[in-house]
Image (cartoon, rainbow, N blue to C red):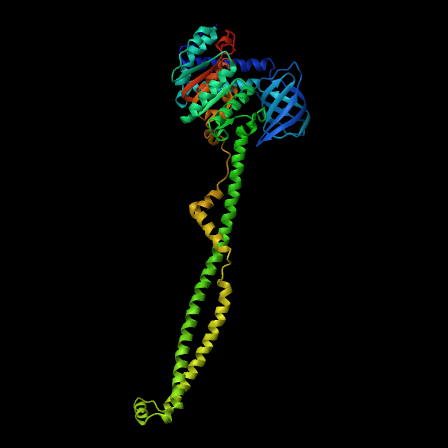
Amino acid sequence: MTALPGTLPDLLDQLATKLEGDAARSSEQGLDQPVPLVRGRLLQTVGNLHLYEFFLSPDVVIGADLSVTVLLGEEAEPTEGIVLFQEGERLILQVFDAIGDVVPSATLVPDVSGMAMTTSSRLMEMSKTGGSYTLGPAERLLPVLEAGQSGHRAVLEALTPTSVLTPLWHDDLTIRRQKLATLVIELIRVNKRILLVTPDHRSADSVTLLIARAMQAAGLTFKSWLSRYEVALGKESGGIPLPELGFESQMHQFYAKSRSDKAVLRKKYERFRELTPLLAYKAQKQKDLDEVRLLEWRLLTHLSELQAKIKDIETTLAEYEQLPIWKRLSMQAVGKNVESLREYKLIYDRQCMGLRKEIDIAKQRIDELVPEATVPRELKPEFAELKEDVIRLGGTKKIRELLAAQENTNRQAFVQNRRVIVTTAARVAADPLFRRVRFDVLIADEALHIRSPLLLAAAGLVRERIVLSGDPREVTQDGPWHLGN
């Protein structure tokens, strides 16, 4: 048995050095040699990830979470992926490029040394740049790992729960996971972000389903908060659609909706730009129409006044001889005699003729402007709705910026919006995404089956608390927590 160093940085350095040695030995022993695969078929596609089933020789064992390259022949491009699961001759791969519905044969190139070096680099980074990692909770694992390496079951069973390190020990797996699900609900209710790691992907699927059921029973929206990082191996169970809880599926649906919303916004914006000059033109024509109508009204009013004067003159001339002499004398005194009245009538007639011509011109212009100024009935409410949307979104400049922005499927931003991320400890150690995200709580399901370097790599990502779940009776001196493993 190798004694643990006194400090966490020293332990991280020691484990990193050992992993570097493992990587060198893997290359020397030929563990990265190509492996022939046969009878491949596509199981499902989620977003940009594809799940394939292959078969290999029964004497070949490929480690889970191992990064691999799949070669399909000289003419086909290789694709990268990871091993999710092996059961006998059956191998499940998650790859980044579709390689057909049926693949008669392929060659698998595992990267055993690469995974060891990646984990080594992560631990070395944690020990050298502790400021960017929160190593306080991880330090509490030192005595626990020492007890596990020694096989001291009693020490593990006697662990006292604290606010930083909480053991969930029980000899029954079902009871342990029920306690775990209850704890997850409690943490969600106090707005904690949880990283839940398991030893393998089957366990990750089982825990995801259990937590989803617990969240559903508690009235929580598990589809929004719970995410299974890899493509799930299982299907729907008990009304819980496990594939829809996959991180890639959720992200694909989110960005598909985003693209759809963006297309709708672009359509509305283009329609708004189309209607704006049209309605502005209509508004100007309506203004012109109002001015011409006002002119017509003034001309008609003037014409009516002149016609009234002409009628008065005609009445006066018709009755002039019958008017009393004193009235005729009074009219003549102001210049109104028969001759002058006839001259006034001629003047008024000429003015009326000119006014009628102007009125005819105005009426013709009105007839021209009416169709030009008329807005179709359905355009007014449509434009009003579009204008309201434009104002709500911050104006046309803001909309142009939104439409011009390049869509970037930012996995880091998306994973930070999930309340619970379920994955394997090996994926946390190997995936570069987890170098940049942080969590409040780490829950290690079946922690005694997770190798100590992988457990520490996950523990360095949490700020507040670590929860270990398992059965202390399963601890052994040569188990996963032993420094030699």
